[in-house]
Image (tube, rainbow, N blue to C red; front, side, top):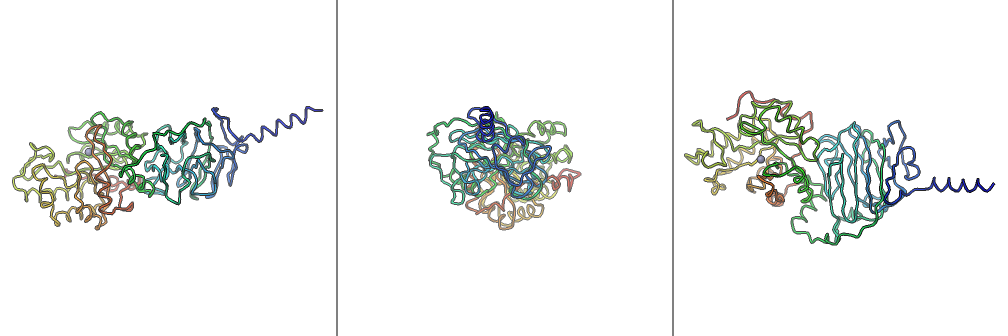
Amino acid sequence: MKLLPALLFIFVLSACQTTPKQGELTKIDASNIDNFCLLHDVTVTGEGLLLKGASSSITSQFSLRNFELTVKLKTTTGAEGILIFAATDAASTADGYEVKINNSDYRVGNLQKTGSLARIRNNFVRTATDGQWFSLKVNVDGNHIKVLVNDKTVSEYDEPGNVVRASDISGRVLTNGRIVIRRSNGNGELLLGELIIKPLKDSPMDQSCQISPDSLTKVVDQLNDQEFPLIDFHTHLKGGLTMGQAVKHAQFIGCNYGVAANCGLKFPVTNDSTLNAYYNAISKEPVFKAMQCEGREWVTLFSPKVISQFDYIFTDAMTWTDMKGRRMRLWIPEETFVDNEQHFMDMLVCRIEAILSNEPVDIHANPTFLPAKLAPDYDRLWTPERMDRVIKVLKANDVALEINARFKLPGITFIKRAKAAGVKFSFGTNNGTNTDLGRLEYCLKALKEAELTKEDMFIPRPAGEKKVIKSGLPSKITG
Ligand SMILES: [Zn+2]
């Protein structure tokens, strides 16, 4: 007779076991979630837990400081949500870190996509697809935060000891807090399959992270806080640079990368099959996938369908053929012919106009570049009339103007003029090796001096809006 109360006691105890054990993996799904979490407007379906309404949420009843968490999620079109951790007050938006869940296309919904450590280290790259299960992983250990999507690191951040936040997110600091998954809009559906959590021992804060940020770190932190799309759209895996190193560098300096293959005549990527192979090799990486269209012959080498897999494509006006039939590459003195500087400049502007109005590119890279012989006279040769002709053709064809960190181009006067005309901008480094990635120094200088805002910045077109699909490729090369 004494057995029953004892059994009852054990049963009640196990039903109330709401904290996963330290160092062990605990799997939480529809079968046991009530033991661990409070549900609001969540229904159980054959596939998992459905967060359908705009206010649907799952909130852990336990609080953790350090942990490894993996959530299996699926979104339908338009659905957005957030995963919050270190939340001491689950109802407050000022409290805890936010990781975005958003798989919508570019220029659709929130600019930040899945894996974004919102306002701290934003991610603008699509990392998962609507309608497909994906894993979102968050690791917190000491002062180190790591966010992975489908096992690729998307955001990484060390919280400094002397952390300073904007007043509306003053509680976005690491602490013993709850984990919350909730909807942030009312579109589509968010499904949660399972949540696997492993609480970790408290490890001492890494004192080496008492960093005194330099002026550039402060600017980058501020831009992240303002949700400014800080993206370097022009990097190359050249000179020994690997994808892993590029991604790590981007996360270290606090921006996102677009990685481009150089595609054209006499380049390794020179036809549909090599272009496809390149795309497939990088398709799962957490970077924008880009094609740099080289020379003028590229329009005859690739097909629109293969090109349109890329997030965006860009070209410069550094390779063209002059009136005397000489194919020039302006960065190579032996291949550049300047018989008369004024005629050369007029020809250059004509070529830029032809390229940008005929080739269906998204960005004009290395803009206003002049051969070494003419570069010292940049300000004199780029007259207001010439600048305005280039600006006009950019605007008319909806081509973004790259602000190039390597060449420090175009000049600030040009950038201000282009902004006034409503041209969009992109930042680009155009690194040549694994040692010259830099930190977007010139782009950040231009951003400040020309007072660029996030509305001024280029974002890749969504799938249905690609220029190459809408207008096709010119039937012959442009010059
Ligand atoms: Zn390049």
